[in-house]
Image 1 (cartoon, rainbow, N blue to C red):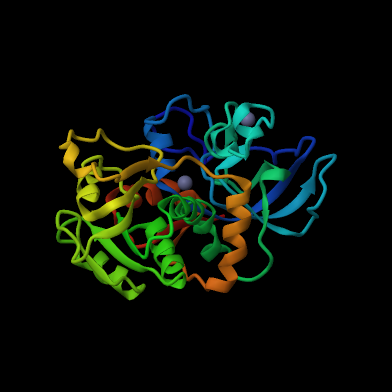
Image 2: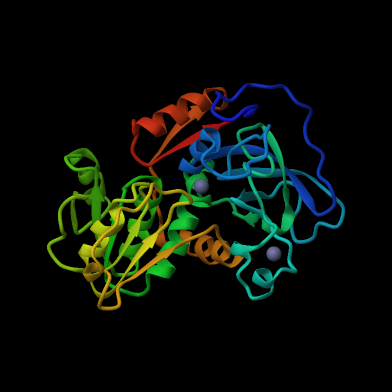
Length: 324
Ligand SMILES: [Zn+2]
Ligand SMILES: [Zn+2]
């Protein structure tokens, strides 16, 4: 499913199977999650996309060909391929273990072809062995929603009371992680969205309510997964002195001005960008122990445009997953 031109539907296209270059693997795509960032790619709100491009960066695949020089992975192995597709290894960020901020990165489904396809190639060093536990469909959302959620949680700190603004694919995974860590989760949804609030409670949220109200207790930290900038001052009002507000998205609408008093007392605002391979290994290593259950809605590959439209309209809980 190829994005030929920004702001147009993806097109079903027959292409020869890609050939893995040096250091690359080719996988048969088993499942690929649909992330809000795919919408941002299609909508052209992210700067400098490569087009045409095959979107999709929550790939579960099985290796069917190896390029030269690949070590540590073998044909037949099931792997996950995330958003971070390649880093330069020599820029100041790469050299200080901040490869998520690399100056010359490649991103899967954005600047190199992704997983809305029957087959794709990936840099072997940025592919994670997944083992055989868990279904392809249930694992796919972990590759971005789960990983970005994990990185956001690490940046949010150790606080026990955690607010999650926007209860979609990432938050429904992260709520389970946070609960497993012994934290209390406070879920914020669109005002009046009682269905999603009930969904959050079913996953162990201590409290669920509209983003326009304050939680019953001040929060230690809040993570904002929704793309609405007006949530930043709302979350600042919800966190205690010294609390943190973490913006997890790659794109957010403008943040309205707000009184300094809601930031004062050492509250902090941070953003999260991309992931490191260490994030991937840390998080995916924990997944079997936590027993994360992802809520997914499967779509045939050819219905990728429908999946994107349903995500845009909020027509499902959890995550959409394309099943080639
Ligand atoms: Zn770099
Ligand atoms: Zn994503």
